[in-house]
Amino acid sequence: MLTISSTRLLVLAAGLAAATFAFGARAATFTFGDTTNFWPGWGNGSGDDGVDTVGTPNLLGGRAITDGSGLLTRVEIDYTGVISLVPSGPAHVVPGDLFLDANADGTWDYVLKLVASPETAIGNYASATILDVSSQVASYITSGPDNSGYWSGYLIRDGHPYAWNGGGTAIDTGSLDPFNDQASGGTLGFNLGAGLNVGTSVRIGFAENCANDVIYQTVAVPEPTTLALLGAGLVGLVRRRRA
Image (cartoon, rainbow, N blue to C red; front, side, top):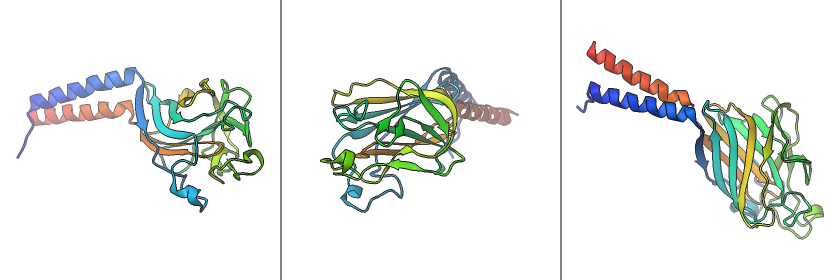
């Protein structure tokens, strides 16, 4: 039977302790992709359901960033194509709200509000309200219909959520980084104020006002204490062996 010596266990425990110190002393970054065509329950029964992207932009995935205490402080989403700062911009496409589901249990807990009303962005992306919506019944502003009204001449993903339309409690102020709406491609950077407690995993939801591509991804966000507890357990095992 394979065994590990007490000395090696102590070395491993020390390594975990060092990793814990380093992890807790600085931000940690966790990547996610884009593997979902639409949010669960929000297919529209058309050919849109079978494709990841309807036209542009194309969301590529991104990063969830935590601080040293394990709070989620920032989300970044990379994209190709053009996204506008305002509905009158060059692309007709503007960012939707950012949705966060703490512990990925199927209920949205936080929303970074970037949409004031249908096809209308908030007045200042540098000061966006973070809502606690964990006790609210979900209600959304949805995209479409395509080739009609605001979207006359455009084909988009119809009837998909892109903004929160329910209640909630304002708990902090976040922001969306400035970005070049003349460029083809870039990164949307969402800042989450002092940080949000999302447990050990978080589901990230996002779509533009056209919902041509959407994000619905779960990211594991281990707490800094997890490594410390594992290291302590190994030290305890060594002590029991020597006793």
